[in-house]
Length: 222
Image (cartoon, rainbow, N blue to C red):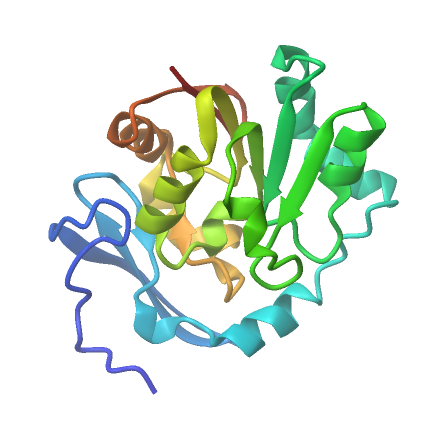
């Protein structure tokens, strides 16, 4: 059982020490704590409450991510409908955190884009991380980042000089509403972002960011 008296030493995104507990839950998944950073506005779950790799994988396999499911495709199109019109026909992409059913890869290929997948559980071929891309998608993945500083650093490094990164994750700007927010109830969700957090990430990595529609952030390089 985690030591509830042990405070996290720093934020896993900006590495700042100005963090405070914002919520503690106790439900069918057990007890978890949630802390907020005063610097980058990230809300995060301390490592003591993270699932191990195998338990995390088992939870992901419970998700209904069928690439042929029109409802799932419609869900992913919230990002793809924004990103596709600003891509060039020759652009090459990566779906980072594609999951067990890489529907967005299928959708991009149907639209005649060259796109690969990477996922530490379901597509762990590290050679996909040895090149750079014109565009990267990261849908319903950033909330699973145990080390968002490392992950966003990697994503920025994988972009070509004029590349685009599309991130889709539920964002909450009214932090006082966090305790009643459904999104933190999934035990694999570890990091929770706001518009302020996305702006901080962009500034940290020399990117520009816009939020063209709810829960979608588009980062541009160069």
